[in-house]
Image 1 (cartoon, rainbow, N blue to C red):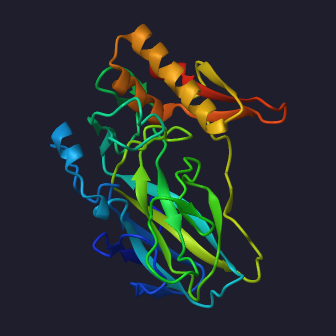
Image 2 (image 1 turned 180 degrees about the vertical axis):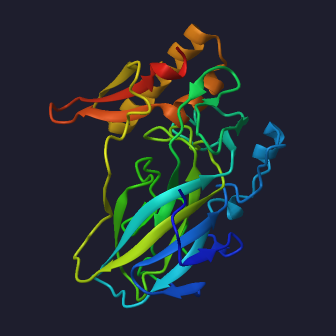
Length: 314
């Protein structure tokens, strides 16, 4: 059942980057429920008919558009915006790409690659992956946040203390997210919707997919919140847990290098075992595998693990 909403903000009302001077497209009272039309992370540059040549031609000034901003009446610095995410309305189309120079293993995968997805928008059955496998879906918004206090235009790519491009796959339907307000009205925006993603989004892209999002914006006065926090409505990995996991590790004194080692070994394992090209295994890891810090107290070495759900390829 679709959630009733008070307003709709169309995808034409989008912006690139965070800037407190961007005029709001709408002013709403706390407690308002809004449907946002969100573009995919390419801003429509990649379509169901795109080829790998289109990846190399991406205009990075037009990536990660966010719909908004919305001015919330009464919001002031020191408050928080409570975002209750009700539902996603997926499009059935998505893409995953290896973009040269981007991603955890950018030094190992210098050539562009692209996988176009067609999935069940209504039932959200696991989506077929071109080289093999079926990926369980879990729609969420990769970029969701408020305008920062610092004046000027700020890139949408890195996450910020007011949210932004957090790429947390558990910001799914039913989640309650709290964001610290730094400017009058908060200036809320959302975009970068995904049909599925692994924790870490290791190749830099998920199943990037345009979709609509219905959510409610509430105001928490004098929250004193320093960073985003959220509450989930239940288990977060049930869609992946059914058949267990293959796990590789990275051990050393640098967490970033440990993460690279864990993912690189999983790519090698999947490519050898399932006969797929390494870059295809890398992209598959990005949409359904999870990076975890398994140990960080027994210095000088830490352990990073990469969990790949067996249900995808069994």
